[in-house]
Length: 490
Length: 93
Ligand SMILES: [Zn+2]
Image 1 (tube, each protein chain N blue to C red):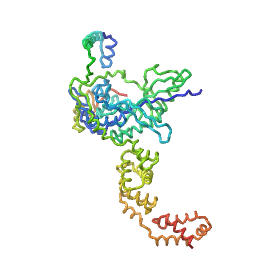
Image 2 (image 1 turned 90 degrees about the vertical axis):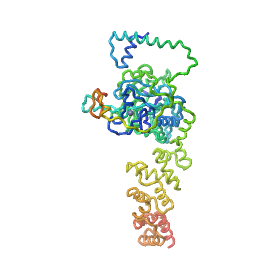
Image 3 (image 1 turned 120 degrees about the vertical axis):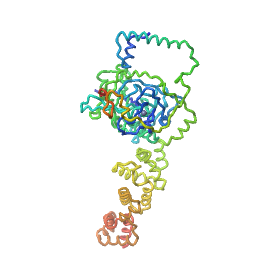
Image 4 (image 1 turned 180 degrees about the horizontal axis):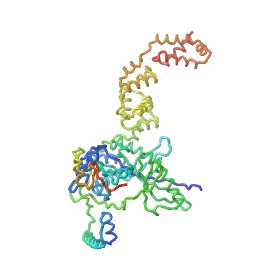
């Protein structure tokens, strides 16, 4: 059976937690990891008479994110109640935004540095503010009859970013998520930590299949419960295959069946149907009478726009244009986040060549950070100290191998450059010392001398290795030059 | 005006259990309430901006400064069931 050709159509809904100290409508802390139900008050538990008050910082972060996503920021925005019953939702409604969101109609540009898909703009339908629900826990293994509810998360500010169905593959979806996460991290809008639940992804996916009687669309399925970007990629790949098989078997098209929700099972690597929240589609939104609208002035929006820093995309092109890095190298560095770029900028400001700095950051610093499970902020060697070391390498006072050894001592023992070099016994080798070393080597290795004279220049390599053992401080390049000179002279 | 199916749906969404007699009674009452509000439809609102809030007030914002939450005993005090840390509810799977 040959495959009919089809296109996968993917739209993503991403929830990110905004980087605030307090909740969206009350001043309870949002600190992660507090004991259950200790960051809770009458407002976030929906006690009668409690009055919500909008968090200025959350609102500004939402606008900032909207601006970075090239969205329109409407002058007027308001809050609505989304009504449903669930044990983790104490008020019986979620405060969200229905018809007048804080931002709308933007886009995010995505690309692939290996050229596996052409760069494209993924449309953003809207990005709106809403509050999170609480957390319910159920220990199935213990067979406990009840679920436990912790309301610390309740009321935490979220930005829901809804894309247009503009992604045509699981790979594009992953690229969109990676770029979105990076953008929000660069903006300082969110930590985007999936483990702590500050970034969550739902996907809407279906297929457009070419048939003899025209293109038909399969029913749209919402995929949930994807706990990593890798899981999103695999779930979407699986779901596209599953929908194709389903269509072969049933011929079902969009509109034939109600919209289905499926959950990704990471162990079994399949999507499985999820039980729907009963009549969940009827949320009976209405404007929240406890909250007044927000109306922006030009000056207020301009002030927020001032805080827009460079986007990851802009930083990438700066590194390529100003520092002459390859697209790949620039991509690797930018991927590390804004702290790494600040570190890079500080190293370059000290006059180190960009190419050398890029090599060291990518090969040595990234490896050390990984080994030590540290972020660049925690790295014991400052940008200035690294620059000092790289200048020694650049001037030829240290070769790359010795440079690496010095860096290891600086990192592991927390010493500065000079004391690290001293502890390794590194000192400059003067001309007479070098000459003695080379003479000794030539005397001990007459056969090498003969080989070189006979034209086998490569034979000299053996002596350079020996020189390294005898005096690790001797620069291999200088040793080589002097050896050749002495052979030719004698 | 409002049929019993609509009343049953609203009741279900509000998690209310109604007897058949109640459904009939509320269908009448809700119908009369809607008819009362419907009178507004007689007004010409062509030049009237949609109203999002009756108060002439905007931008009521608060600074992002934490203030103390409730003690946990207070939070859990009125719950039908709790274990000292968390609320206990029928299983959510
Ligand atoms: Zn609170």
